[in-house]
Amino acid sequence: MKIGTQLKKIRILLGLTQKEFSAGIVTESFYSRVESNHSNISMTQLIEILNHNHVSLYDFFESLTKEHFEHEVIVAFIDQDIPKLKNYLNITKSHQIVIKLMIAILENQNFKISEQCYQKLRTYALKAEDNQKIVLVQCLLVHLCELDELSILMDKLAQFPNSESDDLTLRLKIQALLVCMRRFYENGDDSKAIEAIKLIDSLPQKSITALERVVAQYYLALIKKDLSKAKQIKKLLTDMGYIKYLK
Amino acid sequence: MTIGDYLKDKRTKMHLSRKAFAEGIVDSSYLARVEKNKNEIRATTFIDLLAKQNISLSDFLGEFDDIHFQNYFFQIKASEAYVNHDIATLDKMSQNPANSSTIMRMVIEWLIATLNDQTDSYPEKSKAAIKKFLLEVELWDDDALWIIANCLGMYEIDEINSVVNRILATFDHFEDYSDYKIKLLAEIALNYLEINLEYNLISAKEQKVIDYINQLPNCSSIFYEKLKAKCLEQKQRSAKTRSSMSVVLESL
Image 1 (cartoon, each protein chain N blue to C red):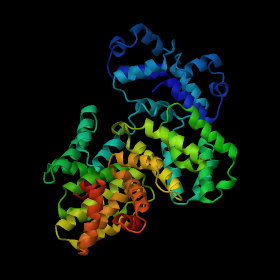
Image 2: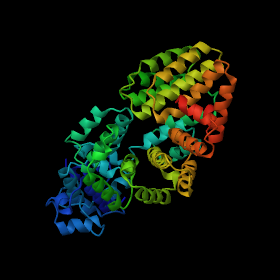
Image 3: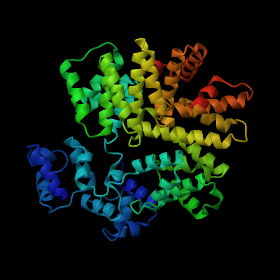
């Protein structure tokens, strides 16, 4: 990111002239050269200009921050993108445990984690204040817990306030519910699977969760023995290259 | 806290000498003066220093950002309100003084006008300002893409084509893009198709955009856009057959 280019973009977004934007903090001619990336501005002056114009520093440095890094890791997990997760493992020192866990879950459906690790996750899910983090851990736990625990987890997910969820939290929630649904179905517990599907249906309907809702419809069709509908959905997902999401 | 204070604080917490901290970027005596607030440090140098020591910018921002108004969350909130026909929220957002960006305010007003079916009375001046912004900004980032996704309806047919062509030509390195960016690109492409295919049949222009959507990675977040695009394509080919796709789409 070039500082000058970014300044210009933000200035134009605000609808201001160079004179107005630089507001006497630096000379107009200097500011003009900074915008064209011909001169270097000091950090203090940069912050002063941004503050004067009520521009969030986060917005300014957005392209440089790894703010969205956690977001991308979660999305990679949802998209079952193992290569991407492995790549993130190499890039970052933090979040190693979570990423490794995600990879293990995606690669091997039958692995088990140590009791100690499991308890750590459970405590975290209870103590964390950030909704998104809680749902993320629940999303991991539903893969790892025993079936009786799964019911309890599903109830906890149901109690989560929908209105406060941002998109990512919503996606995590629906992912967790899908896992519950799948596991109940595979264990012959149709009524619990249907309960999960009902919970999915009750979530806000957004385009970003369309795929998950289709997957839920697929399993509903299987349970109701509506084989032609299930076949239809399966064909659709295959044609569109989305078949992996049924596994 | 000043920049100098911040750097000194970080350096001492890491138990590094000035020489070690600044090595390869500036010399230690210069860093000493910066720490004592006797010299200014270039923004680029500051960023390089943090990067070298693996200090995340978020850490720095946490100390210095008073305003914390983030375009990203603003956009998410606005988009959600729009999809939910929540004119009240959009109204509040457009009047909020914390949102000091004129262009963003105009976009919100356009969304309100669209929901109220009053796009005819939306001021031409605002349209011109938004279009001008998009032309002047050299690099279309996520903010610009969000604006385009929401304002395609403002453009005349010939103008739209140049905007969309630019996007198709510029944004083709999907592996590097964030999920949010890919979603925005898919939304723009789909909005274009919905506008153009209302009365017309698929021509080369629309086919290019359909191909573009198909080339986007198969992320879960854009399944809906891909499905809808495929449906539009099928509808044009054979208006009679009600494909499995439209059945699934209708259930969503």
